[in-house]
Length: 120
Image (cartoon, rainbow, N blue to C red; front, top):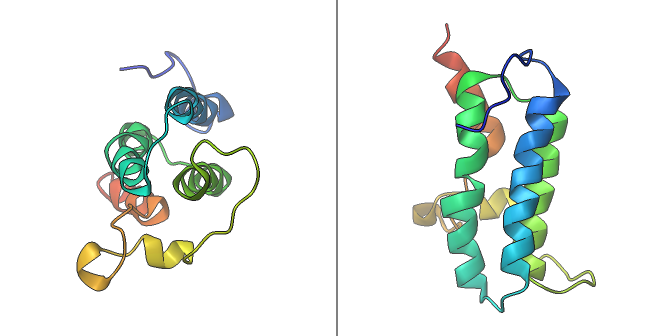
């Protein structure tokens, strides 16, 4: 399933492989002109799914979660633009559920904690 064989659970290589996969996916999508709704759909369907499998097996370091959040946040607001753009809403509000006025993007920190609880 794309996990490095023989890697230690705290190895940075495991985390870097997930970040690299996300960046490869984004490189393909950035060449297309997508609306914010299209980018939101890609974030929810693909960029949230890639780290989920890894988080179900290994604890994910907080620094990696921050990098993944930055990748998702920048893709949502900037799209294929190279220059910086303003983030229109706080990321914490974007990650709230649609029923509560957010965009329904998963909170990776909470998801990682929930998936690590299954090992207790």
